Length: 466
Image (cartoon, rainbow, N blue to C red; front, side, top):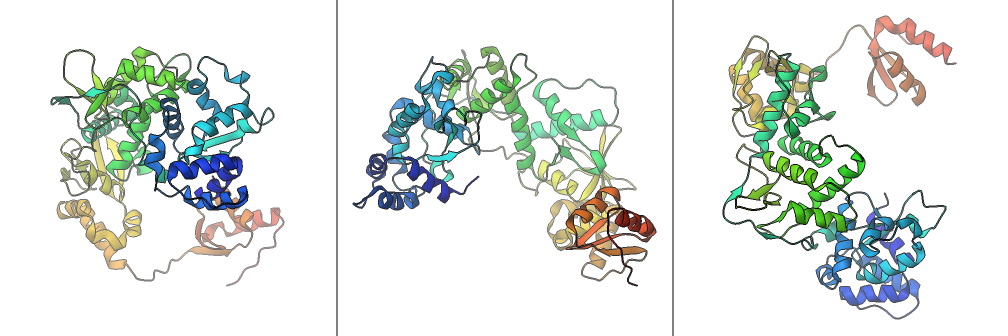
């Protein structure tokens, strides 16, 4: 993706001089006289300033405000003009659109406010029209000025149904431990089951969706992504997933203290061109409430949903909450339910984890501890484990005693390989190979003959230096 400054210049190139003057009028700029080139040079650097953005957005007609939110929904990806067709041209198939004419309409109704950038993208429409290849993006600096999403809402009231999202994360982790430990128990249903199934303990590391979870925020972020994907759905799962991601955006952009019903949420998504079954959307909202990702009112009648005002903090979002465990000869056995999630994830980043007999075993790892040697004295979870576990205490003392010292290893072969392709090949052919930085590699001396054989086969002439 181009940087924002380049996109601002590209936007000014695509717009007419009249549309650039409109940007100055709506944003409160005082434009210079002269040709379009001087006007574009004046407007481009000011597009990314926050001044006048809220006023420009307030001047949008309702249909263009909805289109602006539709562009913002795309997040890090630019929205295409085709994404706006259902809003601007409802009922008309996008394949019959005159893209040049449609772009001019979007430019006169939205782009001339100076709150959206134009970005050229590769699409299947390139052969049909250059304008169909244009994408639209809301700059990050302007997102804070976006008003609530235009959907009917009502106050949630004093009684709000809210669950602890971090407690849900621990429940999913506990279920994953039980499943991985070989116990004959039924897997949980719904989102809890999907999150538990996404957690693994391969090679001694705790992963969720093939990514390490180093803190509650990253763990909860993966849970939100799984929730936004929805459960197993028939028909068009890709379109359903996209609609639920848009629904996540809508419930996160409501007026403070107000919620939306599943029916109104469905209508809002339909106006944006999303196709999702109403009953699936209602079940998705309830899943979000059970996981603490949404809150709802407790009044009679249709439930109203909204995103939590702030992340749950009852379980110590940082790492200063308690780590509850009992030591064993190899490390510790963690009580997941009673431990703070932050403290638990902090320790797993420095340790090996095993799920055995329905319990989470955390074992000290000299290599992982050594990589964080400078921080060992500032990690509360590690301090708690070291105070009661002889295995952790010995590992920390071992690392601390050797920190800053030069270690000489015996039995290693050091290679200097200038060719990047050959260095990569050796890494694939010989998994024991380790990079020392730059052109240098290290591996066991017993593999010397194999290295020479591979080098000669690849057309290199190896040279030994004792």
